[in-house]
Length: 343
Image (cartoon, rainbow, N blue to C red; front, side, top):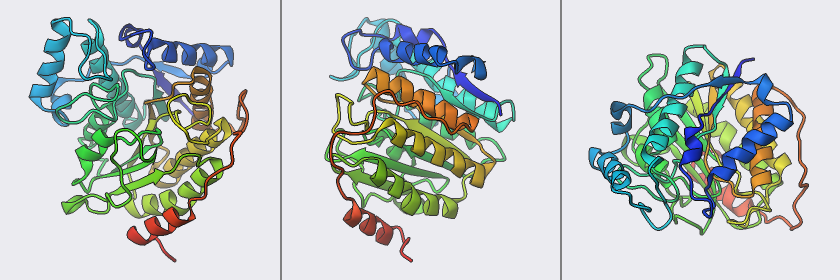
């Protein structure tokens, strides 16, 4: 098994130390991967910048130029949440291109699977707007790139960040070639991802939104994968799985109120890897989105790499949740009806 990680030091140069989405996140991940003996087991895959052609499959020319000009003018923010500095345009190009590079490596057989340790993150960025810490939509750019390969007709995107990936949904809501699945706290930023948002036109039925109340944890997420994700993915039959991996639904994350543990996150990663092996020859690539408790983030990524390598061991220095878990029986029943998954 050849599992790769994408990383470049330029990802650290897009930085505002007092911001939740700072370079500290990636530095802690790399430190834990090194300390736990994981890095020597992985292949380093150097990234490349996304081309303008690749970006234009998702973003408008005006948006790309707006970001380029804002950075050149020395502006500090693209919106109230999304900062920039002199390195941000180049880092954002390398983040999107880094994930494309990993997808290309998987599809050509250079590697078996991988995880793009990139930043800035991407899943909130829309065609014409940067938002929610995101500049370009890395996973959407990579999905569009994958669909240029003759062997790829369908891409399944799983997003377990605690925030809904509104930009990713917008990019593919009418596209039958891409299925987008998201678990997210609701109501919460950015306010999208209702259970009845299922796509439209030719893409109707290719969105599965699971908006969750606070305090849903390991058992609830396990049921979501068993009762919803497996059956819709088996029906869709993807040729590639991409994962927007956010670790901010952990019970100890400072920006959300969910109930997952690191063991619960490891189970999600194992389920997605198993799904890829079952449906598309193991072709799966993760990309980094949110997660703002640095220890949770680093060990969440460590356990995800273990799942990609086929390990069953889980490292959890934080432990299980301290809070009772909310039931999602009614939500699961509603989603099974709307997605025609009832027995």
